[in-house]
Length: 510
Image (cartoon, rainbow, N blue to C red; front, side, top):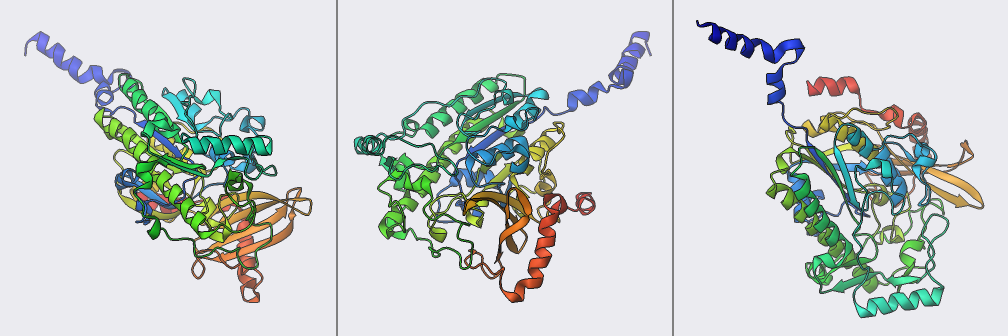
């Protein structure tokens, strides 16, 4: 062999692994995955992929076919800021100290590394738009570039605008919504609007426009991206273009069958006169909703889901057009659930199943069980470690969830024994916290005094095998005395005692 060929052969064989670095492997390694992070406000699991065939959600359903639908995913508190804070910090409300709509998590956790920061620290370009954190409680360190939300009108119909103006004049203006300080009854405009306008008239259409344009710019860069896109519908008011209202026949819309407070539940467990929906014009300040109004509100909520679904479809279509879909992790989550008349409720702000169970869908390149549904008990604090695990991003200390990646490859794995949520209340001047535990069969809620968790004020127990709607609290039934003791012992162990059996997970994964 000629000397020059010997030299070439030596360089080809030795140079790629010189110094322990195998350049051939580096060249063959796939690029780091992008992340498309989609948040939807007030979305309960009313989607086709969750078995609600009366809902028109083709684009979210298409995402589900390429990912994992987590059927029993639970938020940590059923109100916007505490829930979103838990997702973005990977910590529970008692750690972030965010139990309301006014407190910023950095007051208690100034050094927290948010989900966005974790990806930014790993070389990702992290950008957010629309509703990710709650309103003005944004977090500048989470983003590589400033977070932004396009401006858009809340209403467009003259009669809606006039109603809003009249409501503000009659009540002296709006009162900020928040626990303990609900908005004044009828202080806002109408609770719904059906206008024959283009999609980008309202905020979600504009957010989709911005997301599409942003994806085009991100596709030109060599840097992997984490793009957070937040949609506000179906949050009140239930406003969407007419074509989405036209997808539903009002005569076929069914009302809740359990329009009553759960039997033997504590009087403070739910607030049937919740200030959120009562703030809108035309809504009775107290008491039940007339059936025609209840049906109209449901119609508006369904239309708003389909409107947001269409905007998500536009973003997903652009992802595919740009050739980014094959290397992008997509996660879609609703920050908490919502009641549409169940338990006489029209909102969230409770520990009931309808409020704390919300959609969670994750799709990742190369996952082994795409298109499957997992019935495992999962929590929103799990989103942070899951995305880091899927993208190979190092985890900071202090996270209080676990990665769901094993379930995406095998949805039948043994998993958590319980999921935990909470909600604060006041009763007779006493500050209480309801800590709710969802097991495979039961919902078990213990109401304790916030200044002394050993003082139990009330207990709720609902058997989902016999009472899936949580219509009767059976904690005081003598026949359940031993069960209550067992659940109390499990409840006291808390979320740390409910973690997946790691040995079984590793064995099944291997």
